[in-house]
Length: 202
Image (cartoon, rainbow, N blue to C red; front, side):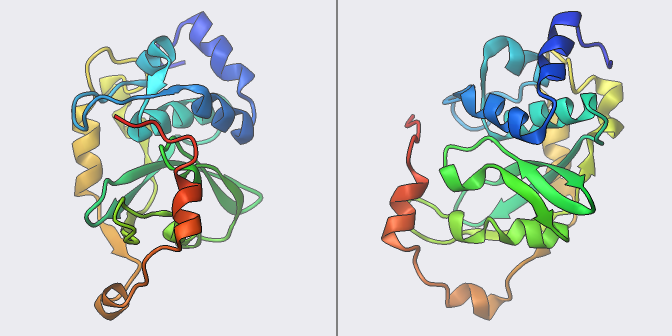
């Protein structure tokens, strides 16, 4: 499939549920290279056994594709913080997500959300910066990565900067009005600490 080797396909075929994919993604070392230095394909992530949120989402989307799901990703846009990428899937008419993150609350979501917006909002309280600000502001609709098959997004040896840049050009939808954003509380200190459990520091 899409140029994957027998060994690569064997790994992805074993990840035959979203939960197994998430466990595999969680088991990868977190890519500590400075933001903007790598944009690895799923092949390279499998080989290097490391990835950041963008790279983990692409690997999750590739694994989902092997098992018959469309390879969909959603971009979460933040202020004073990094964006975050989800691999999303639909089961029994409801949305779930798989993600690689340094924050424990920004990873897996069960497929229990009726809309993409509902799924995105489940990340709101867990999406914060080191100053304790809640930073999630916008999201994209799902992007089907099959449109990038022509550049071999699943197996490319080159960094996938064109795909990364395309995500930034997608329409993004606000989840807060300006007055809402101005009156947000700081994150609860207990949730702040819980979210950093297992964090890998640069």
